[in-house]
Image 1 (spheres, rainbow, N blue to C red):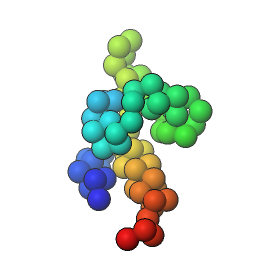
Image 2: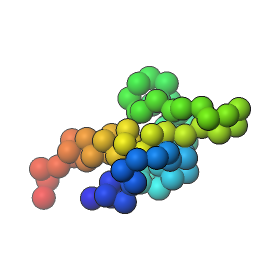
Image 3: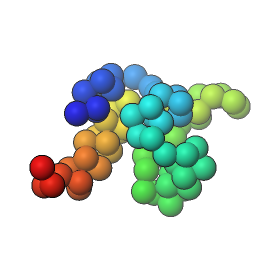
Image 4: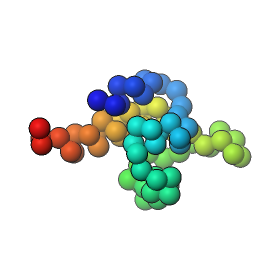
Amino acid sequence: AMATQIPATGFLRLHQILEFFPISKSAWWKGCSTGRYPKPLKLGPRTTVWRAEDIKAFIENAGKEGEGHE
């Protein structure tokens, strides 16, 4: 699974998340605002990150929803 490439701890920037979860930035931000996707953390005025463990769990759960077609 792609999620195995995500570090267990630490922070991910948006461009890193979108490498694992290929959607548009606007779609990702919309999902964050509605609570569908993990909430971001602001480290500074122009630095927004996500917790790696939140992203890993989210992508693993998203993958499970699509399984069963093999």
